[in-house]
Image 1 (cartoon, chains in turn green, yellow):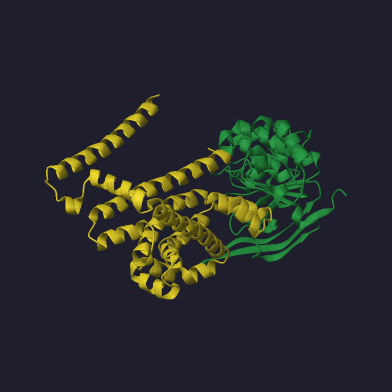
Image 2 (tube, rainbow over the protein chains, first blue to last red; image 1 turned 90 degrees about the vertical axis):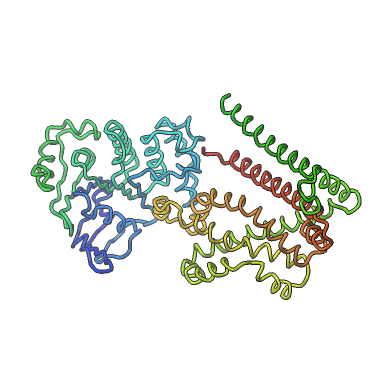
Length: 249
Length: 256
Protein backbone atom coordinates (compact mmCIF):
# COMPACT_ATOMS: atom_id res chain seq x y z
CA UNK A 1 0.00 0.00 0.00
CA UNK A 2 2.83 2.37 0.91
CA UNK A 3 4.29 4.37 -1.97
CA UNK A 4 1.32 3.75 -4.21
CA UNK A 5 0.51 7.01 -5.94
CA UNK A 6 -2.69 8.46 -4.61
CA UNK A 7 -2.49 11.48 -6.90
CA UNK A 8 -0.69 12.11 -10.19
CA UNK A 9 -0.36 15.67 -11.45
CA UNK A 10 0.84 15.80 -15.03
CA UNK A 11 1.96 18.91 -16.97
CA UNK A 12 -0.42 21.20 -15.16
CA UNK A 13 -0.60 24.82 -16.35
CA UNK A 14 -2.95 27.59 -15.40
CA UNK A 15 -3.52 30.98 -16.99
CA UNK A 16 -5.81 33.67 -15.65
CA UNK A 17 -7.42 35.58 -18.50
CA UNK A 18 -8.30 39.18 -17.66
CA UNK A 19 -9.93 41.83 -19.86
CA UNK A 20 -6.69 43.06 -21.36
CA UNK A 21 -4.08 40.59 -20.22
CA UNK A 22 -3.27 36.99 -19.58
CA UNK A 23 -1.36 35.92 -16.46
CA UNK A 24 0.46 32.61 -16.49
CA UNK A 25 0.35 31.39 -12.92
CA UNK A 26 1.39 27.75 -13.10
CA UNK A 27 3.53 26.27 -15.84
CA UNK A 28 4.10 22.61 -16.62
CA UNK A 29 3.88 21.25 -13.10
CA UNK A 30 4.18 17.48 -12.65
CA UNK A 31 4.45 15.49 -9.43
CA UNK A 32 3.05 12.40 -7.77
CA UNK A 33 1.82 12.08 -4.22
CA UNK A 34 2.43 8.79 -2.41
CA UNK A 35 -0.20 7.32 -0.15
CA UNK A 36 0.40 8.26 3.48
CA UNK A 37 3.02 10.93 2.84
CA UNK A 38 3.00 14.58 3.82
CA UNK A 39 3.98 16.75 0.90
CA UNK A 40 4.69 20.41 1.56
CA UNK A 41 4.66 22.94 -1.23
CA UNK A 42 6.59 26.12 -0.55
CA UNK A 43 6.93 29.23 -2.64
CA UNK A 44 6.89 32.99 -2.38
CA UNK A 45 3.52 34.68 -1.97
CA UNK A 46 1.57 35.10 -5.17
CA UNK A 47 3.35 32.22 -6.90
CA UNK A 48 0.12 30.25 -7.31
CA UNK A 49 0.29 27.78 -4.41
CA UNK A 50 -3.36 28.27 -3.48
CA UNK A 51 -4.37 28.09 -7.14
CA UNK A 52 -2.66 24.71 -7.34
CA UNK A 53 -4.57 23.49 -4.30
CA UNK A 54 -7.87 24.83 -5.67
CA UNK A 55 -7.25 22.88 -8.87
CA UNK A 56 -6.39 19.65 -7.02
CA UNK A 57 -9.45 20.04 -4.78
CA UNK A 58 -11.71 20.37 -7.82
CA UNK A 59 -12.79 23.95 -7.00
CA UNK A 60 -11.08 25.22 -10.14
CA UNK A 61 -11.58 23.11 -13.26
CA UNK A 62 -10.18 25.58 -15.73
CA UNK A 63 -6.61 24.40 -16.34
CA UNK A 64 -4.39 22.57 -18.81
CA UNK A 65 -2.82 19.21 -18.08
CA UNK A 66 -4.02 16.13 -16.27
CA UNK A 67 -4.71 15.15 -12.70
CA UNK A 68 -5.29 11.50 -11.90
CA UNK A 69 -7.01 10.67 -8.61
CA UNK A 70 -6.42 7.07 -7.53
CA UNK A 71 -9.14 7.29 -4.88
CA UNK A 72 -12.69 8.54 -4.43
CA UNK A 73 -12.52 12.29 -5.11
CA UNK A 74 -15.28 12.83 -2.54
CA UNK A 75 -12.68 11.89 0.07
CA UNK A 76 -10.71 15.14 -0.25
CA UNK A 77 -10.59 17.29 2.89
CA UNK A 78 -9.65 20.94 2.36
CA UNK A 79 -8.63 23.14 5.26
CA UNK A 80 -8.48 26.83 4.47
CA UNK A 81 -6.18 29.51 5.84
CA UNK A 82 -8.93 31.00 7.98
CA UNK A 83 -10.96 28.69 10.20
CA UNK A 84 -14.13 29.63 8.26
CA UNK A 85 -16.50 28.70 11.06
CA UNK A 86 -20.18 29.54 10.67
CA UNK A 87 -21.07 32.10 13.37
CA UNK A 88 -24.66 30.83 13.62
CA UNK A 89 -23.63 27.22 14.25
CA UNK A 90 -22.46 25.91 17.62
CA UNK A 91 -18.91 24.54 17.92
CA UNK A 92 -20.26 20.98 17.69
CA UNK A 93 -22.42 21.76 14.66
CA UNK A 94 -19.45 23.47 12.98
CA UNK A 95 -17.28 20.43 13.64
CA UNK A 96 -20.05 18.15 12.38
CA UNK A 97 -20.83 20.22 9.26
CA UNK A 98 -18.77 18.20 6.75
CA UNK A 99 -20.37 14.95 7.95
CA UNK A 100 -23.86 16.50 7.78
CA UNK A 101 -23.28 17.64 4.21
CA UNK A 102 -21.79 14.30 3.21
CA UNK A 103 -24.55 12.47 5.08
CA UNK A 104 -22.17 10.55 7.33
CA UNK A 105 -22.70 9.87 11.03
CA UNK A 106 -19.38 10.25 12.84
CA UNK A 107 -20.63 12.03 15.96
CA UNK A 108 -18.73 9.74 18.34
CA UNK A 109 -15.44 10.47 16.57
CA UNK A 110 -16.18 14.23 16.56
CA UNK A 111 -17.02 14.14 20.27
CA UNK A 112 -13.79 12.25 20.89
CA UNK A 113 -11.74 14.86 18.99
CA UNK A 114 -13.50 17.76 20.75
CA UNK A 115 -12.67 16.10 24.07
CA UNK A 116 -9.08 15.42 23.01
CA UNK A 117 -8.43 19.06 22.07
CA UNK A 118 -10.12 20.52 25.16
CA UNK A 119 -13.14 21.81 23.27
CA UNK A 120 -15.77 19.72 24.99
CA UNK A 121 -16.83 22.48 27.38
CA UNK A 122 -17.34 24.81 24.44
CA UNK A 123 -19.23 22.48 22.15
CA UNK A 124 -22.57 24.21 22.68
CA UNK A 125 -21.03 27.69 22.48
CA UNK A 126 -20.63 29.77 19.35
CA UNK A 127 -17.36 30.54 17.51
CA UNK A 128 -17.04 34.10 18.82
CA UNK A 129 -16.59 32.68 22.32
CA UNK A 130 -13.35 30.79 21.53
CA UNK A 131 -9.78 31.79 20.66
CA UNK A 132 -8.16 31.75 17.21
CA UNK A 133 -6.25 28.57 18.00
CA UNK A 134 -9.43 26.83 19.19
CA UNK A 135 -11.24 27.92 16.04
CA UNK A 136 -8.51 26.43 13.90
CA UNK A 137 -8.74 23.17 15.87
CA UNK A 138 -12.51 23.07 15.24
CA UNK A 139 -11.79 23.61 11.53
CA UNK A 140 -9.26 20.77 11.69
CA UNK A 141 -11.80 18.45 13.35
CA UNK A 142 -14.38 19.41 10.68
CA UNK A 143 -11.87 18.57 7.92
CA UNK A 144 -10.79 15.27 9.49
CA UNK A 145 -14.29 14.24 10.68
CA UNK A 146 -15.28 12.38 7.52
CA UNK A 147 -11.90 10.58 7.37
CA UNK A 148 -10.57 11.98 4.11
CA UNK A 149 -8.01 10.09 2.03
CA UNK A 150 -6.29 13.26 0.86
CA UNK A 151 -6.01 16.31 3.05
CA UNK A 152 -5.28 19.68 1.49
CA UNK A 153 -4.12 22.42 3.84
CA UNK A 154 -3.75 25.95 2.54
CA UNK A 155 -1.46 27.79 4.98
CA UNK A 156 -3.56 26.47 7.86
CA UNK A 157 -1.48 28.16 10.56
CA UNK A 158 -0.82 31.52 8.89
CA UNK A 159 -3.32 33.50 10.95
CA UNK A 160 -2.06 32.20 14.30
CA UNK A 161 0.60 33.39 16.74
CA UNK A 162 3.88 31.47 16.88
CA UNK A 163 3.15 29.34 19.99
CA UNK A 164 -0.30 28.33 18.73
CA UNK A 165 1.14 27.58 15.29
CA UNK A 166 3.57 25.11 16.79
CA UNK A 167 1.02 23.35 18.94
CA UNK A 168 -1.61 23.12 16.16
CA UNK A 169 0.92 21.92 13.61
CA UNK A 170 1.68 19.11 16.09
CA UNK A 171 -2.05 18.27 16.34
CA UNK A 172 -2.35 18.23 12.55
CA UNK A 173 0.73 16.02 12.24
CA UNK A 174 -0.56 13.53 14.83
CA UNK A 175 -3.99 13.26 13.24
CA UNK A 176 -2.53 12.80 9.76
CA UNK A 177 -0.20 10.05 10.90
CA UNK A 178 -2.76 8.33 13.17
CA UNK A 179 -5.33 8.09 10.41
CA UNK A 180 -2.79 7.32 7.68
CA UNK A 181 -3.99 10.32 5.68
CA UNK A 182 -2.08 11.66 2.70
CA UNK A 183 -1.60 15.41 2.97
CA UNK A 184 -0.55 18.29 0.77
CA UNK A 185 0.32 21.33 2.87
CA UNK A 186 0.95 24.74 1.40
CA UNK A 187 3.08 27.13 3.34
CA UNK A 188 5.52 29.97 2.84
CA UNK A 189 7.26 29.08 6.10
CA UNK A 190 10.34 26.95 5.34
CA UNK A 191 10.71 25.71 8.95
CA UNK A 192 7.10 24.59 9.01
CA UNK A 193 7.56 22.69 5.74
CA UNK A 194 10.72 20.86 6.87
CA UNK A 195 9.29 20.02 10.29
CA UNK A 196 6.09 18.52 8.87
CA UNK A 197 6.95 17.08 5.47
CA UNK A 198 8.20 13.81 4.08
CA UNK A 199 8.85 15.70 0.87
CA UNK A 200 9.06 19.41 -0.01
CA UNK A 201 8.36 20.88 -3.42
CA UNK A 202 9.77 24.36 -4.03
CA UNK A 203 7.87 26.47 -6.53
CA UNK A 204 9.55 29.26 -8.46
CA UNK A 205 8.16 32.78 -8.89
CA UNK A 206 5.37 33.29 -11.44
CA UNK A 207 4.79 31.56 -13.79
CA UNK A 208 5.48 28.87 -11.22
CA UNK A 209 7.24 25.70 -12.09
CA UNK A 210 8.86 23.13 -9.83
CA UNK A 211 12.28 24.51 -8.95
CA UNK A 212 13.34 21.67 -6.70
CA UNK A 213 12.02 18.71 -4.80
CA UNK A 214 13.54 17.39 -1.54
CA UNK A 215 12.98 14.16 0.37
CA UNK A 216 13.23 15.25 4.00
CA UNK A 217 15.39 12.65 5.71
CA UNK A 218 15.96 13.89 9.24
CA UNK A 219 18.22 11.90 11.57
CA UNK A 220 15.54 11.43 14.20
CA UNK A 221 12.12 12.21 12.81
CA UNK A 222 9.45 12.67 15.50
CA UNK A 223 6.89 15.42 15.67
CA UNK A 224 7.02 18.90 14.07
CA UNK A 225 8.27 20.56 17.25
CA UNK A 226 11.16 18.10 17.98
CA UNK A 227 12.02 17.95 14.27
CA UNK A 228 13.06 21.60 14.42
CA UNK A 229 16.05 20.68 16.60
CA UNK A 230 17.18 17.83 14.32
CA UNK A 231 20.80 17.92 13.06
CA UNK A 232 19.73 18.06 9.42
CA UNK A 233 17.06 20.71 9.86
CA UNK A 234 19.37 23.64 9.08
CA UNK A 235 20.83 21.77 6.09
CA UNK A 236 17.38 21.59 4.44
CA UNK A 237 16.58 25.10 5.59
CA UNK A 238 19.60 26.42 3.74
CA UNK A 239 18.84 24.47 0.56
CA UNK A 240 15.21 25.57 0.38
CA UNK A 241 16.10 29.09 1.52
CA UNK A 242 18.55 29.40 -1.39
CA UNK A 243 15.88 28.15 -3.82
CA UNK A 244 13.52 30.85 -2.57
CA UNK A 245 16.21 33.56 -2.48
CA UNK A 246 15.37 34.34 1.14
CA UNK A 247 18.99 35.03 2.09
CA UNK A 248 19.41 37.72 -0.57
CA UNK A 249 16.34 39.73 0.34
CA UNK B 1 -28.31 50.03 36.68
CA UNK B 2 -27.13 53.11 34.78
CA UNK B 3 -28.62 51.73 31.53
CA UNK B 4 -31.89 50.95 33.33
CA UNK B 5 -32.11 54.53 34.63
CA UNK B 6 -31.38 55.87 31.17
CA UNK B 7 -34.16 53.72 29.71
CA UNK B 8 -36.65 54.95 32.32
CA UNK B 9 -35.66 58.57 31.65
CA UNK B 10 -36.20 58.09 27.91
CA UNK B 11 -39.66 56.57 28.57
CA UNK B 12 -40.60 59.36 30.97
CA UNK B 13 -39.64 61.95 28.35
CA UNK B 14 -41.55 60.15 25.61
CA UNK B 15 -44.74 59.89 27.69
CA UNK B 16 -44.39 63.50 28.89
CA UNK B 17 -44.10 64.71 25.29
CA UNK B 18 -47.36 62.95 24.40
CA UNK B 19 -49.14 64.33 27.47
CA UNK B 20 -47.88 67.88 26.79
CA UNK B 21 -48.90 67.63 23.12
CA UNK B 22 -52.41 66.37 24.01
CA UNK B 23 -52.78 68.96 26.77
CA UNK B 24 -51.78 71.90 24.52
CA UNK B 25 -54.02 70.63 21.73
CA UNK B 26 -57.00 70.38 24.11
CA UNK B 27 -56.24 73.77 25.63
CA UNK B 28 -55.99 75.50 22.24
CA UNK B 29 -59.25 74.00 21.11
CA UNK B 30 -61.10 74.93 24.35
CA UNK B 31 -59.82 78.50 24.11
CA UNK B 32 -60.98 78.53 20.45
CA UNK B 33 -57.50 79.41 19.27
CA UNK B 34 -57.62 76.56 16.75
CA UNK B 35 -60.62 75.65 14.65
CA UNK B 36 -62.02 72.47 16.23
CA UNK B 37 -64.00 71.69 13.08
CA UNK B 38 -60.70 71.14 11.22
CA UNK B 39 -58.29 70.19 14.00
CA UNK B 40 -60.79 68.55 16.39
CA UNK B 41 -59.62 68.05 19.98
CA UNK B 42 -58.39 65.12 22.11
CA UNK B 43 -61.63 65.02 24.12
CA UNK B 44 -63.73 64.96 20.94
CA UNK B 45 -61.54 62.20 19.51
CA UNK B 46 -61.93 60.22 22.72
CA UNK B 47 -65.71 60.59 22.61
CA UNK B 48 -65.71 59.68 18.91
CA UNK B 49 -63.72 56.50 19.53
CA UNK B 50 -66.03 55.49 22.42
CA UNK B 51 -69.08 56.11 20.26
CA UNK B 52 -67.53 54.15 17.37
CA UNK B 53 -66.92 51.29 19.78
CA UNK B 54 -70.54 51.37 21.03
CA UNK B 55 -72.47 52.10 17.86
CA UNK B 56 -70.37 51.50 14.78
CA UNK B 57 -68.59 48.25 15.43
CA UNK B 58 -65.09 49.77 15.61
CA UNK B 59 -63.58 46.43 16.59
CA UNK B 60 -64.91 44.91 13.36
CA UNK B 61 -63.24 47.68 11.32
CA UNK B 62 -59.97 47.16 13.20
CA UNK B 63 -60.26 43.38 12.65
CA UNK B 64 -60.74 43.87 8.88
CA UNK B 65 -57.70 46.16 8.57
CA UNK B 66 -55.49 43.87 10.68
CA UNK B 67 -56.67 40.78 8.77
CA UNK B 68 -55.87 42.40 5.40
CA UNK B 69 -52.51 43.59 6.71
CA UNK B 70 -51.66 40.15 8.06
CA UNK B 71 -52.58 38.38 4.79
CA UNK B 72 -50.69 40.90 2.63
CA UNK B 73 -47.69 40.85 4.98
CA UNK B 74 -47.45 37.03 5.05
CA UNK B 75 -47.89 36.79 1.28
CA UNK B 76 -45.31 39.51 0.72
CA UNK B 77 -42.69 37.75 2.86
CA UNK B 78 -43.33 34.32 1.36
CA UNK B 79 -43.44 35.47 -2.28
CA UNK B 80 -40.41 37.74 -1.94
CA UNK B 81 -38.40 35.00 -0.19
CA UNK B 82 -39.22 32.50 -2.97
CA UNK B 83 -38.43 35.00 -5.76
CA UNK B 84 -35.21 36.11 -4.02
CA UNK B 85 -34.13 32.44 -3.77
CA UNK B 86 -34.92 31.91 -7.49
CA UNK B 87 -32.95 35.06 -8.39
CA UNK B 88 -30.05 33.87 -6.25
CA UNK B 89 -30.01 30.43 -7.83
CA UNK B 90 -30.42 31.76 -11.39
CA UNK B 91 -28.43 35.03 -11.45
CA UNK B 92 -29.17 35.66 -15.13
CA UNK B 93 -32.88 35.91 -14.29
CA UNK B 94 -32.07 38.61 -11.76
CA UNK B 95 -29.99 40.48 -14.35
CA UNK B 96 -32.89 40.35 -16.83
CA UNK B 97 -35.53 41.50 -14.34
CA UNK B 98 -33.47 44.02 -12.35
CA UNK B 99 -34.23 47.15 -14.46
CA UNK B 100 -37.93 46.26 -14.70
CA UNK B 101 -38.17 45.79 -10.94
CA UNK B 102 -36.51 49.16 -10.36
CA UNK B 103 -38.87 50.92 -12.77
CA UNK B 104 -41.99 49.28 -11.34
CA UNK B 105 -40.80 50.01 -7.81
CA UNK B 106 -40.35 53.71 -8.55
CA UNK B 107 -43.86 54.05 -10.00
CA UNK B 108 -46.27 55.66 -7.48
CA UNK B 109 -48.54 52.79 -6.46
CA UNK B 110 -51.64 54.99 -6.08
CA UNK B 111 -51.37 55.51 -9.84
CA UNK B 112 -51.91 51.82 -10.49
CA UNK B 113 -54.72 51.57 -7.91
CA UNK B 114 -57.58 52.09 -10.42
CA UNK B 115 -56.01 49.48 -12.70
CA UNK B 116 -55.88 46.99 -9.82
CA UNK B 117 -59.58 47.59 -9.07
CA UNK B 118 -60.51 46.96 -12.72
CA UNK B 119 -58.36 43.84 -12.89
CA UNK B 120 -59.28 42.28 -9.54
CA UNK B 121 -62.65 43.85 -8.75
CA UNK B 122 -63.79 46.04 -5.87
CA UNK B 123 -62.98 43.45 -3.23
CA UNK B 124 -60.56 42.58 -0.46
CA UNK B 125 -58.37 40.95 -3.13
CA UNK B 126 -57.64 44.37 -4.62
CA UNK B 127 -56.72 45.78 -1.20
CA UNK B 128 -54.25 42.95 -0.58
CA UNK B 129 -52.74 43.34 -4.07
CA UNK B 130 -52.42 47.07 -3.49
CA UNK B 131 -50.47 46.38 -0.29
CA UNK B 132 -48.36 43.77 -2.08
CA UNK B 133 -47.56 46.24 -4.86
CA UNK B 134 -45.97 48.51 -2.27
CA UNK B 135 -43.92 45.97 -0.35
CA UNK B 136 -43.12 43.08 -2.69
CA UNK B 137 -40.42 44.51 -4.97
CA UNK B 138 -38.51 46.35 -2.27
CA UNK B 139 -38.64 43.16 -0.23
CA UNK B 140 -37.34 41.00 -3.08
CA UNK B 141 -34.49 43.42 -3.73
CA UNK B 142 -33.41 43.71 -0.09
CA UNK B 143 -33.61 39.95 0.65
CA UNK B 144 -31.73 39.17 -2.59
CA UNK B 145 -29.12 41.71 -1.59
CA UNK B 146 -28.78 39.91 1.75
CA UNK B 147 -28.29 36.63 -0.11
CA UNK B 148 -25.57 37.87 -2.45
CA UNK B 149 -23.63 39.50 0.36
CA UNK B 150 -23.17 36.14 2.11
CA UNK B 151 -19.55 35.48 3.08
CA UNK B 152 -17.64 34.28 -0.03
CA UNK B 153 -15.06 32.50 2.09
CA UNK B 154 -17.72 30.38 3.80
CA UNK B 155 -19.17 29.68 0.36
CA UNK B 156 -15.74 28.46 -0.75
CA UNK B 157 -15.60 26.19 2.28
CA UNK B 158 -19.01 24.69 1.43
CA UNK B 159 -17.83 24.17 -2.14
CA UNK B 160 -14.77 22.28 -0.87
CA UNK B 161 -17.25 19.96 0.89
CA UNK B 162 -19.18 19.50 -2.37
CA UNK B 163 -22.28 20.98 -0.73
CA UNK B 164 -25.35 21.04 -2.97
CA UNK B 165 -27.54 24.11 -3.54
CA UNK B 166 -29.96 23.08 -0.79
CA UNK B 167 -27.14 22.81 1.77
CA UNK B 168 -25.67 26.15 0.67
CA UNK B 169 -29.08 27.78 1.20
CA UNK B 170 -29.62 26.03 4.53
CA UNK B 171 -26.20 26.54 6.09
CA UNK B 172 -25.08 29.84 4.55
CA UNK B 173 -27.45 31.93 2.47
CA UNK B 174 -30.57 31.93 4.66
CA UNK B 175 -28.79 32.30 8.04
CA UNK B 176 -26.55 35.07 6.76
CA UNK B 177 -29.55 36.98 5.35
CA UNK B 178 -31.38 36.61 8.67
CA UNK B 179 -30.64 40.19 9.75
CA UNK B 180 -31.80 41.57 6.40
CA UNK B 181 -34.99 39.50 6.54
CA UNK B 182 -35.82 40.69 10.07
CA UNK B 183 -35.18 44.30 9.03
CA UNK B 184 -37.44 43.80 6.02
CA UNK B 185 -40.16 42.50 8.34
CA UNK B 186 -39.91 45.61 10.51
CA UNK B 187 -40.10 48.00 7.57
CA UNK B 188 -42.68 45.86 5.81
CA UNK B 189 -45.27 45.72 8.51
CA UNK B 190 -45.84 49.49 8.39
CA UNK B 191 -45.50 49.58 4.58
CA UNK B 192 -48.16 46.86 4.33
CA UNK B 193 -50.45 48.85 6.58
CA UNK B 194 -49.97 51.88 4.32
CA UNK B 195 -50.85 49.72 1.29
CA UNK B 196 -53.94 48.29 3.00
CA UNK B 197 -55.21 51.76 3.96
CA UNK B 198 -54.61 52.99 0.39
CA UNK B 199 -56.57 49.99 -0.87
CA UNK B 200 -59.36 50.64 1.63
CA UNK B 201 -59.53 54.27 0.47
CA UNK B 202 -60.21 53.01 -3.03
CA UNK B 203 -62.55 50.04 -2.67
CA UNK B 204 -63.47 48.96 0.83
CA UNK B 205 -66.76 48.62 2.68
CA UNK B 206 -65.06 48.19 6.07
CA UNK B 207 -61.75 48.88 7.80
CA UNK B 208 -60.04 51.92 9.28
CA UNK B 209 -59.27 53.28 5.80
CA UNK B 210 -62.99 53.10 5.03
CA UNK B 211 -63.82 55.00 8.26
CA UNK B 212 -61.32 57.75 7.36
CA UNK B 213 -62.58 58.13 3.79
CA UNK B 214 -66.19 58.10 5.09
CA UNK B 215 -65.27 60.81 7.62
CA UNK B 216 -63.79 62.92 4.79
CA UNK B 217 -66.90 62.52 2.66
CA UNK B 218 -69.26 63.69 5.43
CA UNK B 219 -66.80 66.36 6.65
CA UNK B 220 -66.49 64.71 10.06
CA UNK B 221 -62.83 65.49 10.64
CA UNK B 222 -62.96 64.20 14.21
CA UNK B 223 -63.73 60.78 12.71
CA UNK B 224 -60.81 61.19 10.27
CA UNK B 225 -58.36 62.08 13.05
CA UNK B 226 -59.77 59.30 15.26
CA UNK B 227 -59.07 56.87 12.40
CA UNK B 228 -55.51 58.19 12.13
CA UNK B 229 -54.97 57.82 15.90
CA UNK B 230 -56.29 54.22 15.78
CA UNK B 231 -53.97 53.52 12.82
CA UNK B 232 -50.98 54.84 14.76
CA UNK B 233 -51.80 52.54 17.66
CA UNK B 234 -52.25 49.53 15.32
CA UNK B 235 -48.97 50.31 13.54
CA UNK B 236 -47.12 50.54 16.86
CA UNK B 237 -48.63 47.27 18.14
CA UNK B 238 -47.73 45.43 14.91
CA UNK B 239 -44.16 46.69 15.20
CA UNK B 240 -44.03 45.45 18.81
CA UNK B 241 -45.28 42.02 17.66
CA UNK B 242 -42.43 41.82 15.12
CA UNK B 243 -39.94 42.81 17.84
CA UNK B 244 -41.30 40.05 20.12
CA UNK B 245 -40.97 37.51 17.27
CA UNK B 246 -37.41 38.71 16.60
CA UNK B 247 -36.47 38.38 20.29
CA UNK B 248 -38.04 34.91 20.45
CA UNK B 249 -36.03 33.75 17.39
CA UNK B 250 -32.84 35.37 18.76
CA UNK B 251 -33.32 33.57 22.05
CA UNK B 252 -33.60 30.19 20.31
CA UNK B 253 -30.73 30.75 17.90
CA UNK B 254 -28.54 33.11 19.83
CA UNK B 255 -24.91 33.31 18.84
CA UNK B 256 -24.38 36.76 20.23
